[in-house]
Image (cartoon, rainbow, N blue to C red; front, side, top):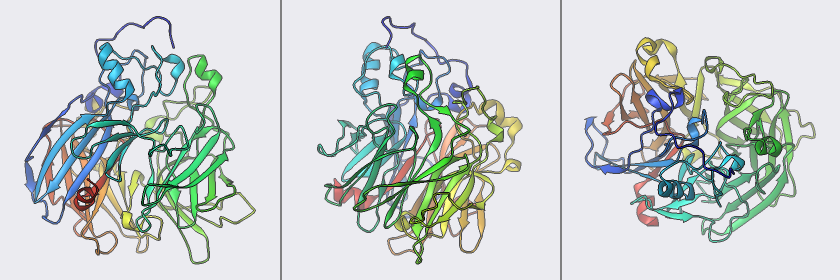
Length: 495
């Protein structure tokens, strides 16, 4: 923390992460009865929640990364063939104190030593928004979540699970067991910045803490997403490491380590006594699709994986980082014995070699064998880059299509929204509780860079090549990180 407040910027800097598509939205409000082309089936009833990093003030730190912005929650209520929209910022401590000061006060990404003032909780609550027992939880993995009203989007405050939260941090990707309704969670840097401690914990369907296990990782590094099976929990570690002395000197929280293996923590899900840390050659694990166990007891784990540093804005100690166009994530499958004493992971297979991310499955099959995977994908020939490149900005992942891969049949389908359009993370909506796996709709926010607006595209998985409906939004939405679909009946029961 500095002794004197730094100067107040009056405009967002002329940097790629704040211009074009990446220009902050900074809108709060609502709009009902949105314009729709095509038709939304009457069976669809629920809310698509998503969050975007959306700074309310320009940062005083130079070259602030795009996902250091305040969490702004969008809620798209869809029922009876109609769509309604509401958006509101999470009222974090940071947001409230900066609004009172009329300026940015938070310093570098996850570096409290660069702040203009002291915060009790530095969270921006900008990474994921999940529904849990009648509340929305706005998650940022360096802190507890913030609880919000799922209807009004009012912020209730920090949420510690009725005093049961064992870790000072909370994952941005908790998992809900679709059968037992157990809420499976973890926190890394669980005892504070720079600590290698990882805390695994879960809550039963009544909201009571049912598991708590503490582990020490091989190194203090980022664990953004994870995966769960019936009997195991997997923690893929990104080789971005933390060093407190570097932070105290004003440096970055994270630094890429090209010499560090790709570590995969493997822990029994119930009654665990300890964990093993499997390893593979240096790689960047992206988001998990799913994991499950085979009849023989092996674990199958599908995730996006790159051999490059995807977070290129945090280079290695020599300043080396790949160019964004060099980074490719493949849908990768690891199959291994969790009881093996050989902790070297067998070589994985590549399910899809196109550049992809933000995988989703039919969540009714989470933690069990799946055959359908949906994701964002980049297919260069289908985009008019001469038109959109000057309007893209930079920093966020860029994808121009939605993909659907059937693991069993090998069938691969793509939906292209248009040659000036870019897609964001999709959500899957099942056609009904008893529908076959993967039978339903994919819903995603889409940005039309030529028109400068945003839309929701609804794609029927039975006819994946075209949109069944396009919902026109009244504001341009900045790229977000994550979101989830919540069925209307679940909201009505929990409220």
